[in-house]
Image 1 (tube, each protein chain N blue to C red):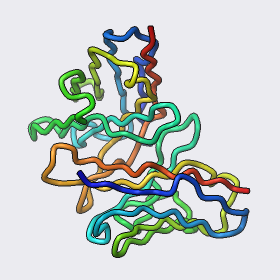
Image 2 (cartoon, each protein chain N blue to C red; image 1 turned 180 degrees about the vertical axis):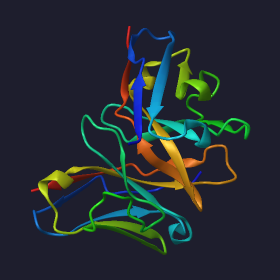
Image 3 (cartoon, rainbow over the protein chains, first blue to last red; image 1 turned 45 degrees about the horizontal axis):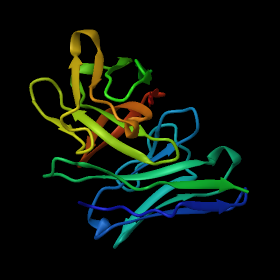
Length: 109
Length: 121
């Protein structure tokens, strides 16, 4: 089965840029989706299909995907960005189609 | 406004059963595939089950719940369900329902706030 690898944690100072990676074999050929999960709240889709921002998601949040790494970038980080972030791909042709990365805890210093 | 509200969680003994519900509003439920994911304490997101729109006939289960959980939907009631039988301690988690979206591949566009399931003696 396909495996997505994320760093367990990323720390960044307010106002700086955070980059959260999601590694996978030839992930650049796949569509990667990103979710934000805060305590007491449900998941929020922040990036779909590598780089598309849903309505209401600030332009500070962006995504890219190439080669073996997809990246979620949060610019001008704010305290409210502190959360767990998960990448996800869909594995068509299998009976286990949803694949999540292990998640990255973003800490705002 | 799209809304998904889970209910039915609680404390249950190992081997017991629970039925989770997800009531939706703000969109045409019958037009969307739906999914359940969970997050165990201190762990990441884990996909549980997905169900297609009625008529397409697709249902998927994670290997960890196959044979024990059953997903269903009632389009007339705008509700999604997850019948959980033979529960184990490792099923303890917050369970979220989600509306699936498709743009080259599938993903979760909207999610509920979750309902907590605790399996303990």
